[in-house]
Image (cartoon, rainbow, N blue to C red; front, side, top):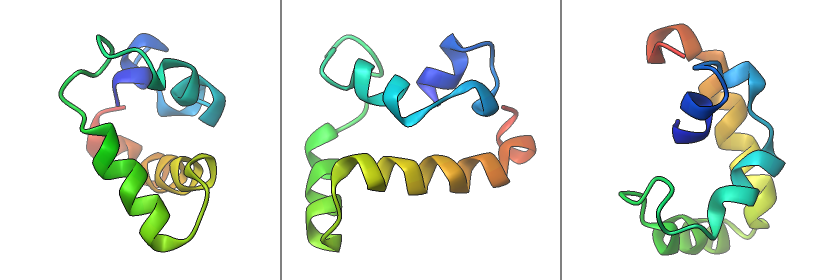
Length: 68
């Protein structure tokens, strides 16, 4: 969601690469526990990039409910 807020409050403007670009910046979305997300992707047996893509697509489907 933080990336969407930077990208004009629209999830449609967010790409997986945009999320990954910000991923290493601890100051960006600092409330997000990146280790939990990385561990979850690992437990699912999928690469982090693919996991972020799946979550992003799911969020896009309910973007109106999210206000994005």
